[in-house]
Image (cartoon, rainbow, N blue to C red; front, side, top):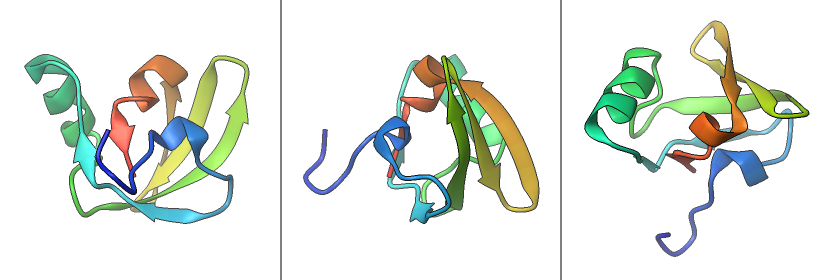
Amino acid sequence: MESGTMPITFADTNTEYEVKRVGGNAKTKQHLEDLGFHTGSMITVVNKSGEDMILKVKDARIALSREMAGKIMV
């Protein structure tokens, strides 16, 4: 993990964060980037419950598993 970064799974709700890096294998990275999670984009954790998270990117709310969301570094 880069200094000063953390997985979005550790982020506070209702706070905007800048994506620093998207990890995972090539297919996972491409999928997350297609959803709008790319370096420099601003995202907000809307809700964390159980094994899922709802993230806001641009004007969309997207539900991801914590495992998938853990690939997004802010």
